[in-house]
Image (cartoon, rainbow, N blue to C red; front, side):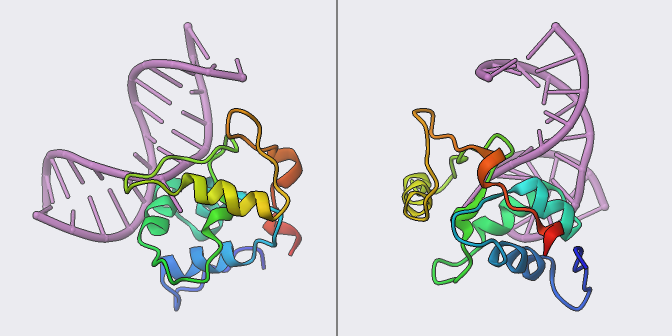
Length: 110
DNA sequence: TTGTTGACTCTGA
DNA sequence: CTCAGAGCCAACA
């Protein structure tokens, strides 16, 4: 069951559930989640923007298809994401980029 | 109902 | 590899 398309759960609930499944030291792309949740990557980003700060969802493990942290509209936060990932063992280069081939997580395995 | 916006991805150059 | 344009879906006015 790699595609939990439960109609009982809201679209956001599916996205948050998928992100929560990402273990420490691994990352996923918006496209991956969008594909599994049944929506486009933009919607995933929008759901993350609506994510409350008290949420236990590891939103910092979500990056774009290029393995980079996308700038958000509201103030900073990209540095927080980079800091949290760095604490989990994810290394960034001078371009604020990480190796997707190394850290990308596959939901198909679980 | 339409039109705009947004933490994106794909394709072509 | 990078940059620009088009497509994409959901929320809001």
